[in-house]
Image (cartoon, rainbow, N blue to C red):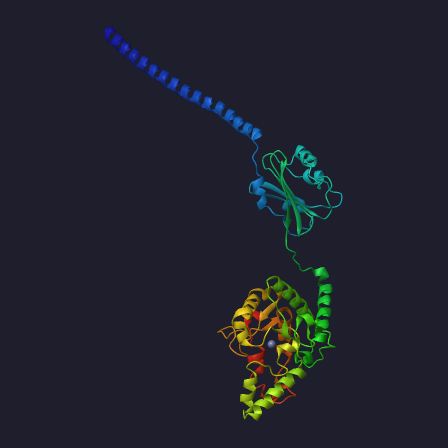
Length: 426
Ligand SMILES: [Zn+2]
């Protein structure tokens, strides 16, 4: 029994020793893990510190990103502007847009903004840029500061003197100027309700002034070229006639075109300019009577004349905007000097506001009216206004007073001839 008990005790002892060993091993493993964790956690802050240290030492150059930033043109007119709309975080940059109010300084603008330390304000203030003063903002003008998101140092400074003139200064991380550039924007006219009444008055006055001269009689050519203020007498060197008149702006633009052509060795001279109704009537009736005597019926007669000549009251020459250049012979422009002159006009006349009115017939462009006239060019800025007015005000009853005027309707003079022009001239 004692023996049995002692064996039993021995067995108990073995089990106890085994359990104790197992416990000891487990404890030791756990302690090893926790040591590792604590090692890791002491290592981690150290690594972070190293990373932050790097930021301090090696500053990131954000200046290339600034070029994407533009001064906001949004009109903001409220007190909360500073707090809500003026700070934007874009492309990792802090962008401050502001319009300076009386008494405001850089410090008073930047101090209330969280994340812009006083040291930054000082740094910006001390940055020396010729012609610009950070401490003396111009009241009412727009400014933009772009700051580094890490340490709020200045990356760029933009001063909008006006919508058209904007100065942009880009600095490198050490606040040394990297680039100063002027951004020029095209002028834009914006609707301003406060000035709308004034504008409409000005426009009205101008329209009335134009309307006063652009009468139905003018459009029909029933005017005196030497007394009507739309026209100007052209100096002899520009034409081949004893005297010639043109619409004022047309004359100015032709002179510019002639002098440009001369530089390219091309001579331009006007062989026919403004012709009023009365001179067109004499051309028309002379041809009409001539054809009549040859036995042509009225419609055939008119159609023959209309190959190259206009019916009175339907000619663009009445307006002084249309000119015939160098020759009235189609063959002249087909080769040699004439071809070179024509090619020059095709390539350059557009720069001076001129277009060829009677081009070859093409589908969807011109399919009615006079034959191709290489010599006939029109000053579009004016002639398109006159054409518009003509279409608004003139009807077939207004075309009268000469032999064959009753044919105007049958020949669709307004639809097919007055409007039978190249789409380049519209
Ligand atoms: Zn002509």
